Image 1 (cartoon, rainbow, N blue to C red):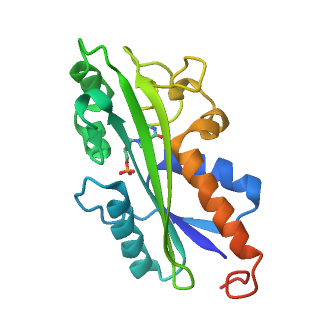
Image 2: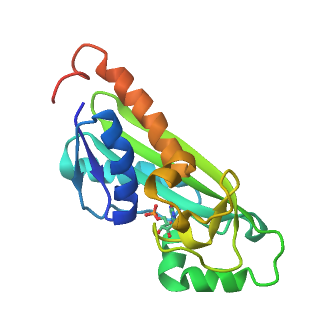
Length: 196
Ligand code: IMP
């Protein structure tokens, strides 16, 4: 099934494209800003956002909502990550973490997909890690320069190539679940396997 990836975030897009190209998925990209409701739940935000996108585009759509959840700040900034990034940024978050020794955190991603044939579907991914004491690296986007994944070698996400980040990241994980699902549909007779 052809679908449309809806986002205005170039960093996310680069990561999706690096994964999707390996699976010959048929998709296009729409740089559309979707409506993001205020909610503490990424899945609720992804749900409103994917339905909003479908109502405008009227074709199978994929959106993603993600956030950085810091344990010692009770999950802050979580669903407000994008706002916090735009306001206080990486430097502000590091200041908030000043003198805090417990630095464990997670990035979480929820992909929302909607088509009239399948209804609404969600795919979640998470990566555990810790917040560094200083900003390191220039790749990626958002809070990448201060997130050190537990499964890595001590580098922050911003010190990794896109393919290295995708192997262990929240978005890499939610994307792989989505790909498994959509490619299993392709194996079925119409309407999933055709070009509608
Ligand atoms: P949203 O999913 O567009 O609401 O934005 C989530 C915000 O969380 C982004 O603006 C980033 O600040 C942050 N974020 C989400 N995923 C990542 C990531 O993979 N790396 C770095 N920051 C991220």
